[in-house]
Image (tube, rainbow, N blue to C red; front, side, top):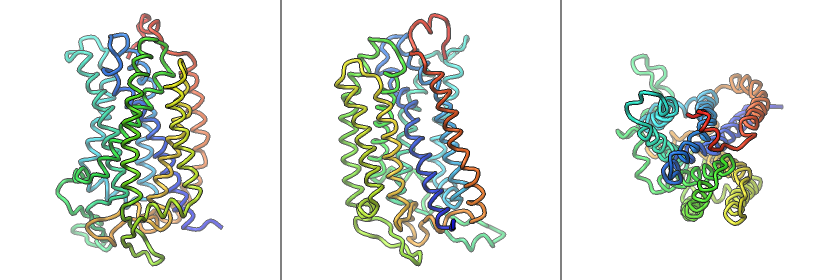
Length: 380
């Protein structure tokens, strides 16, 4: 029998999957961060933009789907975070607007700002979007300053359930070292994925060599940030929820979660191994170009495991530092059983959508991008 609790857990699984896919697809942002770092000539920069330009809609669509899924399945999170931490989400959306405008206008005739101005916008999107998204996700573990009062819905003068206890609109997240470390780790990861994708998608030896050289330094930086993040995560106090829904601080909560859920531990380890294999084979094996197909799935698995640590095993996935009992859990922030049931039926079409995307992805990437494409005038 399908219970309400099962539906809540099922939808957190889907949220985790979408989150993993989003971080993987942020290779578009990672690739754009390399426009000036790896692209030393006009042709090289245009090749990078042509490569990422074919996929940016997938990333943006996944971001919107991720937000939509959260809104539909856990509306209290959506209203609390998007209503309180609005500056973070506004900045994220602005960077994606810069991206869309830049792809559309950087190659247009009569462009008053010039190509490089829009390429700077793409680079800013490539660095800031993953940083901001990573910092926001870091609050799933460290908490945010908000208060929830469900009784306020009956107050006709001000029916506001969630109130932010800070005047910074979510920007206070950057004051916590873990959130910043998490954001930097995600940023470095997406740039690595971007480098791996460009190597797989572009056939240009000088650009190939420059990307591979930068990949070594990026990987070292990522490993350092990964160790810092995991050391903080597995030694910090977490937000536990007992059978009565009471939230309290629990020492080493996220380490306990990892050990209490063997499947999540296995998922995390397999994902980490795949991620490292993809990068190391690309660095060590001369001419190897398929690292993205190891590191990409590895990234999805690792991100899903982190989401599971944040939400499963009696854990508040969006803790409140202003009022512990206002912390959001799968049980107290989800939609009704009827809504979750109806949406679960709709979710059965997801595999067909993924198959559709995979088919057309392969069609678009059947042949590597070369300078011949630029000579025909097929440019972004």
